[in-house]
Amino acid sequence: SDVCSSDLATYYVAVFEYNGTGISADYLTSVFPSSSAIVTGTTVTASSSASTICTGDSTILTAVPEPGSTVIWSPAFSTANSFTVTPANNTNYVVTSTTPNGCTATASVQVTVNPRPAVSLAPLADVCINSPVVTLTGGTPSGGVYSGAHVVAGIFSPSAAGVGPDTINYSFTSPQGCTNTATGYITVNPLPTVTLASFNPICANAAPFRLSGGKIGRAHV
Image 1 (cartoon, rainbow, N blue to C red):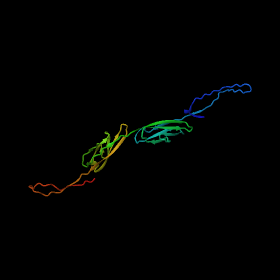
Image 2 (image 1 turned 90 degrees about the vertical axis):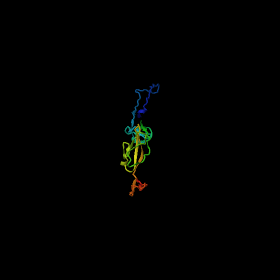
Image 3 (image 1 turned 30 degrees about the vertical axis):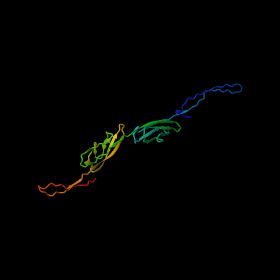
Image 4 (image 1 turned 60 degrees about the vertical axis):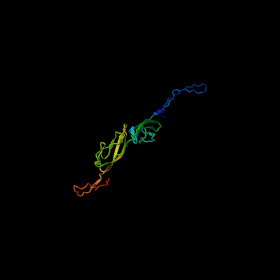
């Protein structure tokens, strides 16, 4: 018969000869009785494409069982040899392999999940299109990176951006290698339209008078 390697045990057999008398038959043995068993077993390995990930990331779990064996994962409850998981916390995944004759083996793989940093970006003040370049600030934690369509090395150029709102991103990477990003906006306002009417000629000895005729038009974004 077949037995699994995990079922191996030592069995003891004792044989006693019996010599009968009278009309009773004699029970004598000339050889020791024997039996046999075929020892079978199985193995399985488990691995992960990334043993350390960040919150929200995924990793691929892979089991390599003996040919013909079936597998089941816990706590994922999957029967696939390879599949993707997105754990929210540190998780130890265990796979159990079973051969057609019922022998089992187990293996495990630990996936560590590091949290993403909390990142924020304070509101950015509006600027005029003729304003000088702006050194971006307000991102926390400090030490992150500002980016955007008109941002170079953390400096925003209003004239290059043109009139209207621009998206500003602030990204920070934790010591564990996890990145998070906060998004804000900076608005570039157009210059106002200013007109001044012509003044009438006056005499050199005319009395002082209040200037007028200047008008400011509404600026449109």
